Image 1: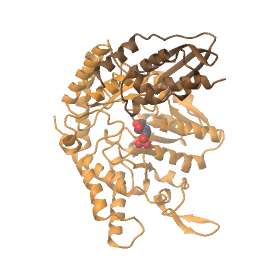
Image 2: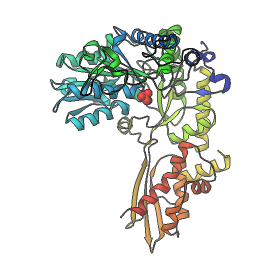
Image 3: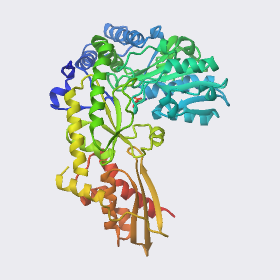
Image 4: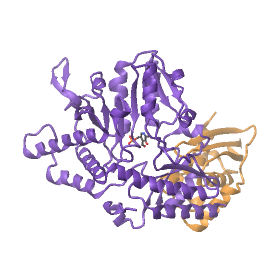
Length: 402
Length: 120
Ligand SMILES: Cc1ncc(COP(=O)(O)O)c(C=O)c1O
């Protein structure tokens, strides 16, 4: 198998580090770190403001990323990409800039039970405030891939908000099929896809999926923290109103009223995370350089091995044992070591996994694991040896707790 | 984590002494939602002194062992003293320094006890 660790400087400092928490945040390759350094040391200026060469270069680099991201996720044009601080901010932006102005009392929003809190609480609270009704797609429906949308979708359903990949189950949801099914009942339904776990792990094509909005984070796809993006299809973009006001988003400002900038800029008030956006561009280049097909293949081989090894362990229950239609995000429970202790003890051995509810409490309640699960998640830098160390670690810790 | 203390915690988690419910006393429930720990503490308090205290609930070994040890310590203590107890005392009690997230686990017992004392 190919060794991708060499692209990540952290492994030079942290010898023997076993990082299996990429679903929380990924490690950063040297090309991304270099790009941040380049910005801060060569053209560290604000954008869209100065006329001096350094500022012009910063603006160019920043805007170039819009195009890179657009083609990386299959958008029609860079004008459909709004930079945000991450997935959470992107979803909140849809609520405030679009749903706020296009949904009214009595309308319905459909969300799934497996959502991360950031694609759940946003809609729950909006529904409460605007007297909308929140309908829930059950976990069972996802397992069986029979959504019974005819019972859940009707003419009042204005938005379906669902993750492309669950951050606990790792399951790749059949968005294209769900969108088609929902649109058969209500052609006017709009669809938001939470892509936090998909970008950087599977090839993404927003047009093929047929979604209106697509949100993701830079830090989970080998980019810097503090940045992400929201794809908004052209038609929905016309229905959005600015939600944050200030510099950079205005057209003209008078004492009584103001007008807004043309295009996506009106959703990027204030100085944006310039370095981070530029760094995220380098992360896109990094992934395209490897090739998403190769990324997928590398991670699925590791996933297969991981599932096989976990399956051999006594007292270990894997939440989603499916081998297909999923990525390397695997939640498990030990019947002898509470998940929190397992995470801690593995950490003491230099093995990083995540324990808890993973910001998906409704899902954990549903699967009956209210004390949480331990999640192992893969990135390109992982190897067979990492998995061997993990499995040995779990065995040893379970023995101590028995 | 020191191996000896680690073993003590694991043993205490597996064989708790103060698990149960004090009937007819005060009680309070508190949860640490990031990891799913959930505790219920019940106690009999007479003349401002804790006579009996027990816990129920589930969670990680550190939170369960810490609350179990805490119950031992609380018996006979004045509630005023309990309200003044700090996180460091919990760390001393279980015999180790805790990392950022583990503090939340270990302190859950004390926080729940304080909540119970303050309740009507
Ligand atoms: C499925 C899913 N949605 C949303 C988020 C939130 O992402 P962020 O914290 O980067 O805004 C995450 C990450 O934790 C996630 O896994």
